[in-house]
Length: 205
Image (tube, rainbow, N blue to C red):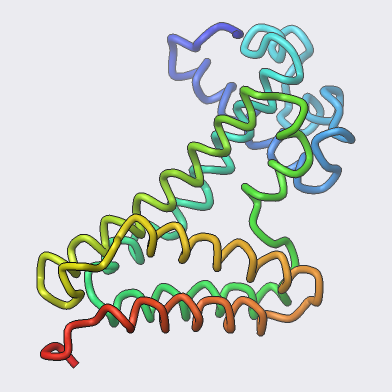
């Protein structure tokens, strides 16, 4: 591991390097990203790169963490409302709307990075898996709140529903990316909502 910055200047330099590396990886792919291009974009010297990061793999680990944060922070306000049925519908609609705005380009950044380097770097794979775990935990927390409020029946398996919902998101994103059409994501999320609907308390309709 490279040195952890101890000053504001150092922290800003490290953040700048990670942001540049994240952009380069998004454009070139993890294998095509070069330290020279990262340094030029940051801008940062080779000595700065190797001061904060041991090697390219260490930098990619930081990129994986940044990608996790970007994807999950972008949903933070929506996660706060996942304690009601309407909140889940708004979250699903927002995911589809985002893909519509992008023309279904890009897919899931976490999954994309996992596909590129997850099989050859366990540290990066574990970091990205932690991102998926955080995503699933946000869904599960909302479902648990719905059980506690009585909106979902007590027999609802919130862990299973959360895993199924996240799998629907990921599968829908892959198909949307492949076809450049957000419709597969819409259908996948509608399926997840229909499954959830089956556990809603009749008195709450």
